Image (cartoon, rainbow, N blue to C red; front, side):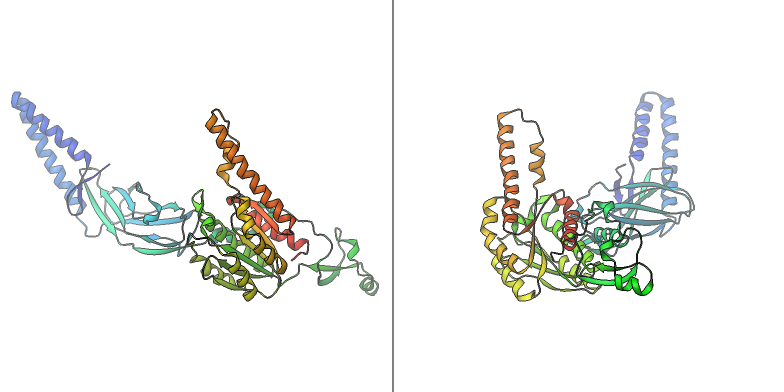
Length: 446
């Protein structure tokens, strides 16, 4: 129903004009048929009486509706966030409502509408979901409710003050999901591979009684002789190792995939990896680089350190310029003194673009265990699986195969130089990065 305004806060419905048109038509017929004229007068007076009753009922209360919006204190980027509206009807009769929430302009939602019936003096709660795709501040406006009686001639607009600003942070929902699985040792449920440990880590934990399944090579014979029970040495992952997320802020990270930019995928995964590293008692840090000043969060292992990383990630944005890898090398040598696992989030579309930066990547790999992470072009992958029927489609598919092959060549060239790589679709970035982190820890390479 599209209401039409006649004066402030009062709108005439389509039903009003339909009935009015019928009354006018009856008057026209009554000009030729006297009986119809008498009927038209009766309909007109009945129409006026109903219209007046409708107005009186709607404006019988000064504040007929109350309500508020329950939004999270911050929204999670790239995830569905639940928004709740609580509306109370103070009328002593049943009403029809259309609720229009003033959603932040970033979502570009122009058809938001919730229709509902309210019983007399009743409360209702409505929920809807928003999926932001950019970090920053999002401004909500008022909650507008168009309310009408069962007569349906008039709609009264009630604006409920609910203006608020909500920041959108990197995906803390994704971070909490992986944190929950990590704590409960159920990471395999979300695609994390179970890595078989090669040999022992170097950090001794404790001596405990042997149970079936323990490695017999870990039996401690001296402790066994003292206690007359079979005892084994228990080892744990080495701790306090540096895990540095390095994010390329150049224009190559502005490429969009499924609503989010590559930069946002990298930011969300950096938050997840940092949190997992802290759970594993490692130190998490952050370095960004472009062609100018960088952001550096030095590695620490306090659990509260994740808040500093999250705040740093919140303000990151690309400047659309070419990134300076030499500046990155200098920044790492200045701020990171200990050999670390460096997860470099960037993107190479061609082999030549990688070759230009290869000397700097090799210099980083001399001091740290470097993992270069870049992205599959999922649109190219779709083209490869489509049937080609025309010459133009064949040409396009050939170009797509060329770029896809170059990505594989980049992986091969980096691996030959001792640089670890992850080539991943954007949506699978978090899972693949965690798998690589756990694999490197299990192999004792960090």
